[in-house]
Length: 291
Image 1 (cartoon, one colour):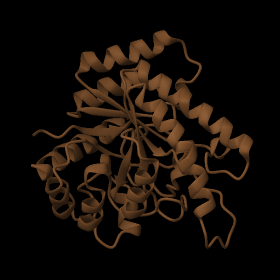
Image 2: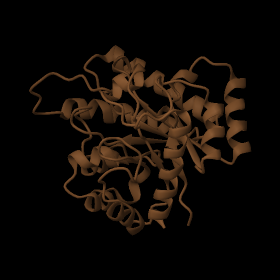
Image 3: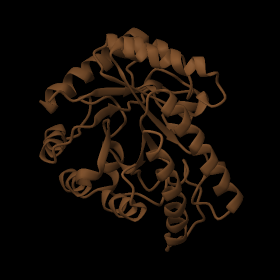
């Protein structure tokens, strides 16, 4: 089957917001099947905006997927009960918005916060884990009723403590026990934490619902040292049919560059046309690799 290849809109931006319709048209023109966007800045927007974005995607033949790192003030694993309550309400708002946009997956650090702000010297993360699982059960039940799937993104140790490996994500999803709670693996984070790409993807198995790709230095696929033969072969091996979305971050500056820690220009001095060519090349590369 033809995999649905996507790109995260913030590849082109320096802020976590933008004209999503503009990037829908751009992504479709460059050969992508999916555009991933951040739903946070859609909170409080008029419903006509949701409808306009949805229509633009439908007209372009593009899928929309969603990704967010939940801010610390909405952390459902927090020791502060008031923060956890706000976090549940906040994520329900996101689910409502995505339902209006046609449903689909919301991925990211939904189970905690990004970046993770934890006390030094933690040797037992079970209290954070248990609080998170308890609230995620409520959120996953809500998502089930609204046509949304919540995808727990496994990230490296420098960004959160709860889910660093596929094995941990499997255990987390089994404890939540909902068809709306699934796994998002990301090659950038896997390269840091996993012993084997193949074993991690196999471990996630049928729970793997969304997949992020990028090189070890966050360049687009094909411009680094990732073993794409191994990664794509492992995806084929489990019969993965979900979205494959690249998350390149190559530009310094702004909130995006600061949050992602891009401290040098990784684009080779590209202007927007150059970024477009780089993205289109990466799209063709990964489509060929997936076969």
